[in-house]
Image 1 (cartoon, rainbow, N blue to C red):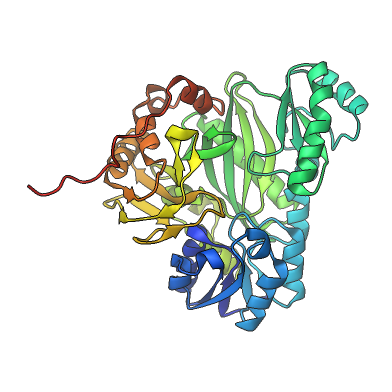
Image 2 (cartoon, rainbow, N blue to C red):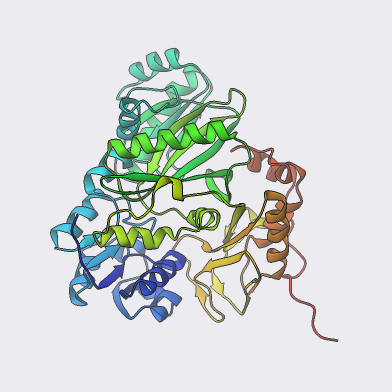
Length: 466
């Protein structure tokens, strides 16, 4: 691919927009932020070389408005568009329209997005590439009769999954045939309402599963992996704590897992950064491919910490037409990294969103500590978007040291004026099962039910001078 551009438009907001702006500036690219009414005073707008207003606060009228984004790119003569994550990042139609407008889409080809972004199509591609998949339907199921017959072969309990789903949404679990017959039409209707596509497929439900994913980079001709991350600590199938590497798998399993990711990514001539997600069965020690995210991930910083590779810069270099600079043997694991998501949520009130004005902000620092955020003192967190404020990332020589560093960094972090999940992460750092890496995807919800969260009497704050 031959491409040259000097100005990059970031079709996103929040911490990922800030992250992309920083990487682009280090490569000498001019940057353009787009913003809605709610984000007029955001950090990304302040940091970018230019900023273009694209509409009202609601995402459907701004960040999801393809015409507005493309008009913004034309108005400032941008040569490329980086979609970040969420919003339009996995829309093959958006990628096609970006390219049709004569711009570079910083990501995979529309064909790869369409193939790997649809879970049923990705599963079929994985099977063709010889990558192990969770036992399930060969494709989408279009009737209750077909679903019941397939489920009888697969075995219960079984998951019903939206083919176009994402972020843990569009998933239901049926314990038996009667429940499957009841849940199937509901799942189809839910998928149609959420994603505009009612197609669903079936998968065996693994009782003690770990969520492990492999980061890859490709230039359309060659692919390398950057090892794996574990994202098993989830609430309502939303990740809140991620680690690299996984403490659960052996070196032999790691090698097989990463090799399977390369096989599948090469099968679709993958370009850019992508993540192949797997379930690891703690009981049988098997791993199964479940889906691919054809974009940069929220948790990409922990991979950067353990490999020393700036994944966003590599995405941009590839989009500039440069061949992949990395050889597989050059990529080495060093130490252990942990990322915790700091959300604007009140954990004591069922994780109710907590928008509002940030009255004080103290960011942790020191060796091996990174805080990717969109926050600044006086900033008003809007109520219109995802509650993610930032990610606290730590790195050290081993997992125990990284946990100690995380506890220290969480103790330094101060965000006042709104509720955040920082105090919850402090409690999780002290949980024996987490300290011993003995958890799975269902662990956190059970733990929360058994350990109701009570917010601190007052926000943590450094001791005032005497």
